[in-house]
Length: 99
Image (tube, rainbow, N blue to C red; front, top):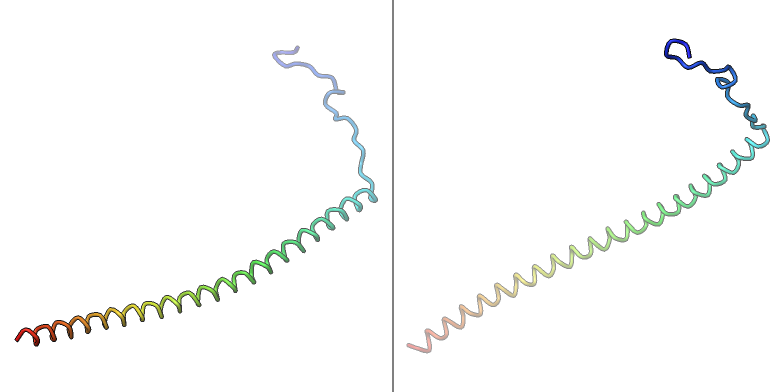
């Protein structure tokens, strides 16, 4: 050890040799990745198409339900008005019968 530093041999500083991939193995690996990505893309495209069709159906159903609610509210309002009118007529007739 020289003034607080540990001495290393040059063999420890050089990394061990690694095999350089060949062109054929790289092309094969890229082909596999591309095949996998193509299948994934096709599946995702199908899913998006299905979800888009479902969204259209849900929008149509929402419109139908809003129309039903509007018609129901109109009927409820009409019956409330009719009941009020009927009670007024009944009150009027009760008053006429009493005199």
